[in-house]
Length: 435
Image (cartoon, rainbow, N blue to C red; front, side):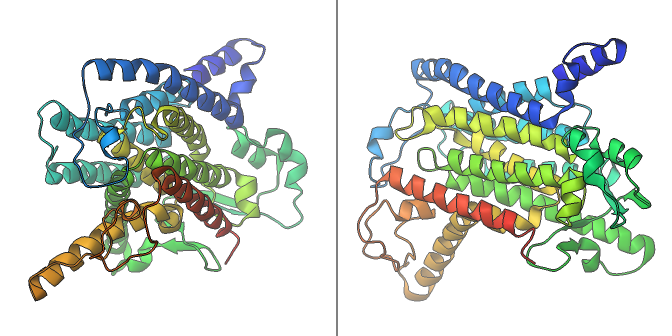
């Protein structure tokens, strides 16, 4: 709203200070601060209301350290995160930007799916919540919509350019380095000989020379058949990523502040990648694809980080509120869609390494237990308990993995996972130069 308001005022009069809102950095900082303040202020009020109405999830006694003390803690705190994202985005983002629109759709869509799941658990007293097939249907449908929009929308393009080595772009561009109209001024003031935008299924892949992978390489045939197949493959990948990351985030949400902190760190990494990909100078310097318009996702991700940090005020150990599926599904969806929009989805196994390991621990535990039960008549567990973070909380002498010995305090587990995630984000960003 402010972005469009000040642009309008700038167009009809020389309104003092209106140009400030053209800068991505200014709007990103403002969005972050507003999201943080909303989360802290509104969070306190919501917690009181949820406690008064006794809206809490059922706590099953699994023999975990400190688990019983969590009984009665309110859930559905994801509402705090979602509202704290939506308000600053509506205030400071360019709402005509297709990437912002897709991220808003993702937040509301998966937030609604998660809210329905929490509602069934809390108000219908059904601990199973929303049936998995309906949850998957919601995730798959969103992935299909995102994929079709990326295919059909003319604003979703990759910028291909050839810049002479003798061009001194730095001298003419630095004053407008992070403005929304950077690409326009560069084209006007520099000597780009050959440049054009195109629809493409190219994405970023780590540790290779050209740092790019085209889904068209997986498609058979020629001409229109090949073009149709490459987009079908790309859309299927999008569906898989959105479903996988949102479920992985949901599985990670088991300790106070774990998912919140890890997601904020991932959001910061995505914000850096989005800024680099949406800036023609930095993308050229790093030799990565330039994606016009994706710089606006930096403002969204900044609000995302602010909302998570504000929620962490109440969700850190000992938690005063849990995010529930309302928050975890929306957060995972935002991370997945953001990476897809900036063509960095193949970096997710590194960037979201915590979510990946947590998901794999559940899969390994279930598959091996069923296999050994069928073969020997008694199931054997690989981990003391899954997801992985619970492995460090529980004693189980029958599990294959027994290290580390003893139980680790919850707060220490969370902090160590955060530190690992910071390292993973650093590695992810470093892959842009390590080839």
